[in-house]
Amino acid sequence: MTAVTETRTLTYAEAVREALAQAMEADDRVFLLGEDVGTYGGAFGVTGDLVHRFGEERIRDTPISELGIVGAAVGAALAGMRPIVEIQFSDFTAQAMDQIVNQAAKIHFMLGGAATVPMVLRAPTGSGTGAAAQHSQSLEAWFAHVPGLKVVMPATPADAKALLLAAIDDPNPVIVLEHKLLYKQSGPVPEAASPARLGEAAVRRTGADLTIVATGVMVPRALEAADELAGNGIEASVIDPRTLKPLDARPIVDDVIRTGRALLVQEAPKTAGFMAEIAATIGESPAFGHLRAPIARLCGLDVPIPYAPQLERAAVPQTGDIVREATELVRRW
Image 1 (cartoon, rainbow, N blue to C red):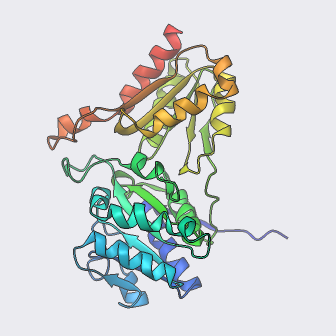
Image 2 (cartoon, rainbow, N blue to C red; image 1 turned 60 degrees about the vertical axis):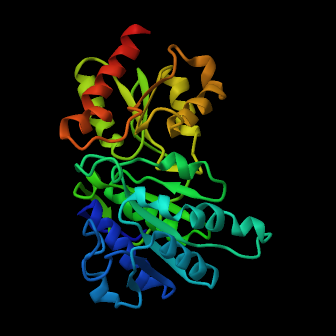
């Protein structure tokens, strides 16, 4: 008999916290380190009361040194622990790129497989909070470009929990990018500690007229746009890669073969963004011969994120922009 798994409604932040707690309860090697993750509960309140539940040895407040934090995590992982790093803003990973790119990502390869780095790095990403240019970037393409790193972008509370659990279980370093605007969003989350599978995309909606591929906060915006488009007689599929690396390209390719049109949506700037990789993947696949329109990208502007709210919104795609671009793609072609 199959066990029934209870599902509750949690916020994205609560789902992350539950994953952390369940992983720490299941494995004494799992611990969390970062700036203000203890008594303060994290910059965005995600870690909450975990320090009271697990103590200061396992919820470790650190000095303000991202290089030192990640370096300590790499060393702990090599010594058999399973560290989870929280970086206050994904922008601050720039301070730790030597440890992320030259150490965590490469040690397994350089030592001929004799060592692994089972480290997770969590970081809030994206714009929308008025935090300006140094606290609002979308840097997923940086990490996806580096061999040895896995990159995850959960878009729902359920995925925030399941993908984080999968990242903690993985023997490789995994970057988990959590969008700030999603922390307060609610959705159904299974109570059981059931990891997802890294490298498995989710088809969020199926339509006949075009395929929308979106990541992070652009997934709910794409779904809102798809509802509006349906009211105008245009049926759109929405596909969420969930894991950028390894990328599960098959659902994307199959859907584009069926619809003949692809609109690729990301918050990050257009130039050299991850959607360029997905565009190339489509172009190099059997879907190319089924295209009825050029592959379209809707991305953030190639500008630093502005502080002024109206300029910040204008710098990244909104729901209305997705509706406009999708309508143009279908009507024109």
